[in-house]
Amino acid sequence: MRELCVGGAKVTEIRPRPDDGWEVVTQDVAEAYDIVVGADGAWSRVRPLLSEAAPVYEGVVFVELGFEAETHQFVDALTGSGKMFAVGDNRALVAQRNGAGHIRGYAGWRAPETAAWDLAGQSADQVRATTLGRRNRMPELAHFISDADLAVGRPVQR
Image (cartoon, one colour):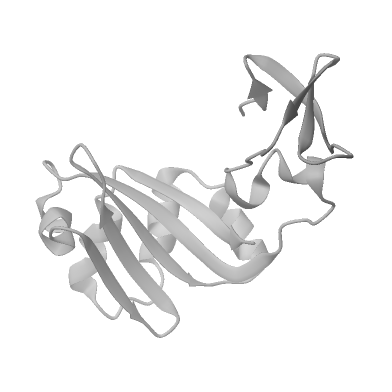
């Protein structure tokens, strides 16, 4: 896990300035900033420094999938020149073309929170098996899951 750093120094506190903006404290040195960005999602390392709001599970889990277009021609063709969506019955398969020949994909469904967190703790092979073990009405899309270079469970939170 990466530490929250500014200029290579570990951030210990972020607090509002009385006049406007934020004060970022690193190793007992405070610097003023107009804007502080915590851009790492629901589990932002900045968020708890600014608010007591905690992430809430949304009832949906996604399996993040990664593909290299050159070696995954099925997914490459399925994705086309941009994005692919296959949705229905509270399930989804999504693929998005990224840079440098990479395609990012997601398989998602509604799941109880405990099942979502269990999936998040599984190995890539276990995630693939769990995902493939779900009722699949389109077996021709099984390659989308079984052949992925990356398979990580991601409970959706806000």
